[in-house]
Length: 279
Image (cartoon, rainbow, N blue to C red; front, top):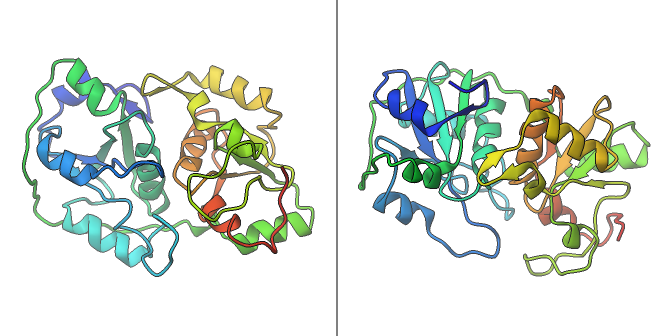
């Protein structure tokens, strides 16, 4: 096993049939995509991998996409998938590390003890010459005992309070620089352009190289170059809470274990003209 965050395709192939290993495909489309990743999973996945739908195992009482589910929703979904808090959950996506960290973050928030991400995702697995299968996958149900840590999740109200009360916290935005600087429209229609007042910009793609995270040393240097103090509290955000999790994982790797994530992110903030922004 590579470390506490990742496994290599070789390691997963060697442990594919271990009783304590559960594999999930957590692929999700970017806002500009209309891809059906569930269908792609049905057609081709790592043997034994189940599909974890970030848009369905979510809070469906809001019009915001893939918001963190209620604890009971998550518990029921993963228990039905045969996952307990003690399983080693290996997460991958079919793309370039866009959505696997969001699933990592979700499992972590609810108390999964052993979570890894497959480096290179499905592409890396196939490039290494390992087999895939098609069709549905089922496991015997398990009981997932939760330890929910809601303090790691930020609401719009908490973000606004931090801004109004000049709380010593840094906002770090994972969107592309052009979106952050309001040079291009948001991919979701109807959203204002700009960013949270005082926010720093660390585009999520800066942390990823060919479907893998860069080294902890490189990641720390990237945050520092963008003016982020790694010794001070941080709240991450992005377009809709997806790639903000990429920053949370990167921060965790460099020792900043207490970063929080603004779940509604710009999909929520950008809709309300009464909320402050900068361009």
